[in-house]
Figure 1 (tube, rainbow, N blue to C red):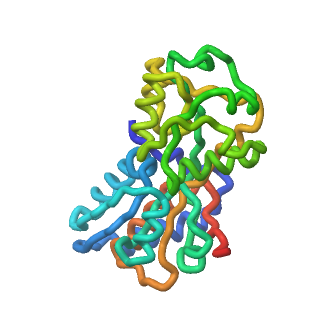
Figure 2: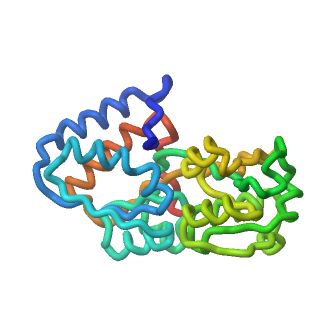
Length: 255
């Protein structure tokens, strides 16, 4: 099922909600235009489709182009003017931060996954020290998923070089397929594994402690110096309204 927004929780500033709704009303007459989005793979495949469907219903005359790539490629495309907005789950390079605004629009969590043939499959949980005792299938450098997993390893005091990485792949789908068929572990978004966990093809193995390090934000990126088209403004306003209750809406610092 598409990842639908979880709704606006009590305590979120109603004034911000009203302002965003007013912005959508002012853009309701938008009849024509183009929206160029750049999205990282997890967001584009699992989080974005439902929101794009709502946008198309509201603005059927807008032509949408969406490019999927890893976080580094999306940030680079935004800097080059290829996209109006970027949607990523990774950390952008320090040299890009003065040029790109970052806004948290939702939250995600990585899961440590194994297939039926892995010794962890039947365990109630694992310890952080267990992570160095198995083979791993990982995403490529530049992937937001890989960035978050390596940051979590650093929090746990484990250099990534201590892990036995037998394969690096270009998408979470590939990681998921390889893990389900073999005896290595992987780390991918919880959005990606719901069906496989339900069917028993994969298991998300809990950590006995330290799992908060696997939590990560979904970020909306935009160029600080470029004016947003009305189509892009409408999309940003809609995203902010849908996900305002899920996460802090504060702009991240540029440094």
